[in-house]
Image (tube, rainbow, N blue to C red; front, side, top):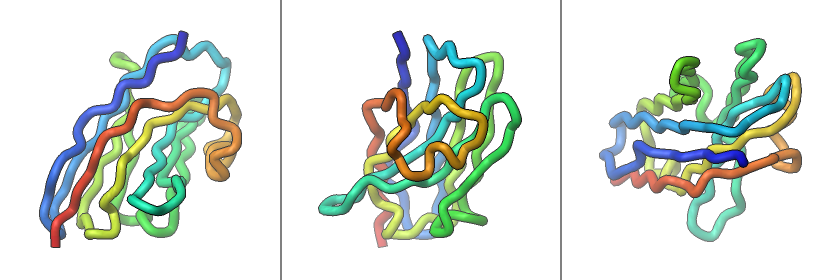
Length: 126
């Protein structure tokens, strides 16, 4: 059984930073992607970033490129999302996700997700 547990959300001022963590277990695909999506109030869930666990290839949404960075801790089966220069528009519930596949592009549409985490709230105050 796959489990994805997010942590690290919170309240931060514009320009500040937060780091989200997603610890996963039970993932048995030979090649898979770990990623982040977010959903703001009244909006649809949108892709943020993804990383292929085998190739280390990454993909970022245009809206976060250059501000957010993915990294990984292999020993802890954890994917990290470092979020810098945060803006009020980044306010959302952030969800960790896993998708079988060989490229993080697999995750971008949100249609091929195998499992979701419970979400963690990020609030950026102006």
